[in-house]
Length: 593
Ligand code: ARG
Image (cartoon, rainbow, N blue to C red; front, top):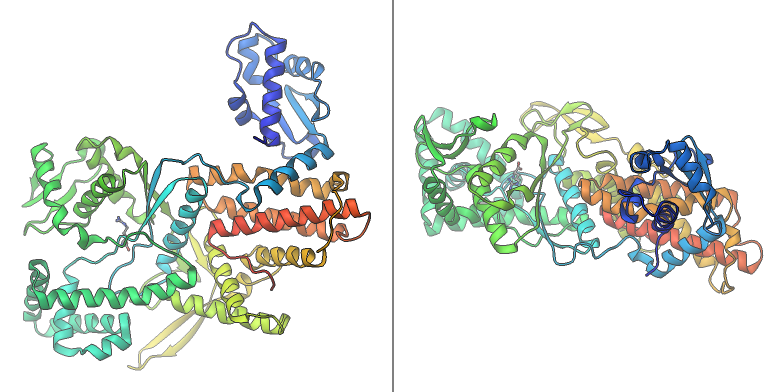
């Protein structure tokens, strides 16, 4: 199998150590050595640096002496020349050799460069998006949707079996109230037409009317009881509400190209909680507190985890306990990721702890992949105060703006509508995945004051698209544009068939680009380890920038045919890698823009 340059350097260095100090114990094995190889911040210090401090103890030698000895004995100059600097062994790759080896690997693997089978035989469950029924899909659910989608693709790429789960919020007394409101003031056609908005309107009306007539609350409760008891009419309406909500959500999922393997939501666990409650009781974990049943977690310095309310009703946590067990029994996951906002941190710590107390060894494989808060123009989201942007509005607006730009820049493009969708989605997804997930995201907004139908003054929040759709800044469209630029060069290069002369790629710009590309497989693995798609966003952006720098400094199609062949191959590899990287974060790469 072909080896990447870092592995090769690690192996050679490891062998050199063994040869120099055959008796020494505790020298790092090649794999560990590879992880110790650092990339100096300044390329003048070399491509890799090995810190010799790590060996001082085993060899009973000062690090600078070790570095000097290692460098003096180094014979692999066809791979890299070396230099001892302050206890580091610095490697300067042989540029032509590095270009040849890296290009060989890039060309061999193509769009699978960075893929792996490290996950073979392992399963990762991902709980993401997990929207709530009868609520409109708004910007607050954007992060979980695109983060989860990206993580799923990353784990797929690394060979894992993945199970995408949309843990629908489809249980709660509000559905009883909604049915009550629907029976009194709604009709089928209006709900079919108005969708989730109409359901929300009914629910709001229920609140208003119930203030005047408190018996409505009883009526709402009675309807909820009917859903619980499986009354056919109540169930029919409830399922229909669900279908209408999902139909709305599907439009968003289609635009984003996001998919799930399961829509088993909270209500799915209605008949799966009793065994969990019985088990908790049998294991003496349930205690009564003010009439409710809880698992005491004071030893863990957490508030108790609520399992049953006074009236016997189950809770969010009860459902999550049943869901976790169901997922383990059904999918035998090696990891179960919950891509949910940071605000639910305590909830997940409680649930995972209770699973541990129940004796589930796999509780340690449950991970809350938390992310930061979303705000609009500096204001926290609030449906009530109108600080809200709906996801379909957001996406449609991005797509419309992208269409406008295409119309201006390349009016003769084929397939304009589809490309506008790809660019609009690219802008939105990139913005969401461009920083560490835990960082709060503030979407820059323009605010517009208006008066609604009822005469109430309101504010409409419009994302500021100038930034997100900029083709020159660090944006999704910029990276997509770089890919399209590569493809355009490649179309002009058709027919180039000479055997590549890799000396054409020994200049600084080409080497920098190759260096970034050669690190990509490590980036993908690290992104998976840290549940951090933004690392891939960073990597593709750096690669796009490096290519553009190269493109401005070097004429790809000019020169000796062998040199052109090498430059064209580099361009093809860049296009392919950008495409792969974008795909991993959930962005498409149009051929032309
Ligand atoms: N529906 C919940 C919400 O919107 C998220 C559910 C997350 N998943 C879970 N298993 N609790 O806040």
